[in-house]
Length: 195
Image 1 (tube, rainbow, N blue to C red):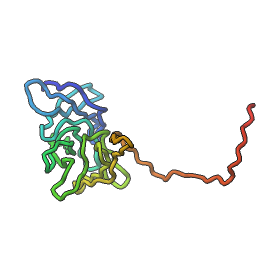
Image 2: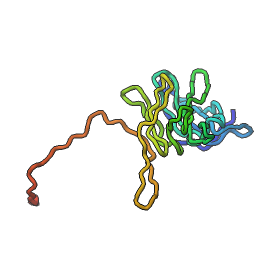
Image 3: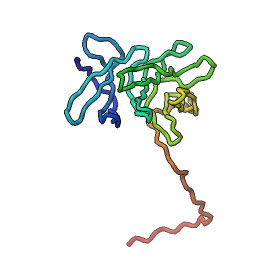
Image 4: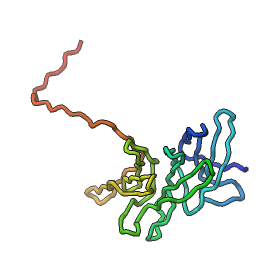
């Protein structure tokens, strides 16, 4: 099989078979798609282009391994919401069968909810509650891979006094304990002596 080019983001380790999996922006010459999924064997140093990502899923950049022996990913442009927008998508890749399928298109949903708009960024984090969390340009979302349900959890955009919209994109990290704060009732200050 010919190689695809331009790997995106860092590959992930899939513990079921010990291979690294990643995505590319381009597809092998003479083929079509919005990128490709590849594997890399660190022992044999063999790179394999596995399959082309269909255009309806879109360009992928972020993969995460799940406990159900599957890999889930985000496309930064892809999917089609009910309004016809392409705000990114969640897809499922199954290494054992080398298959891929679209699970969720971000944007306006048939029930009137908005699960996120703008492009996805930073990948998804598997949290201690067994669900994935990630970000679009406008929302933090929750993805329950066991039910394939996606819900918006928080709106990220902030407007400053000039009407400029700022938004947050990036990787999420779970903090497993609440931050501590100690209130100091004594407000007197003393400069520490230098030694």
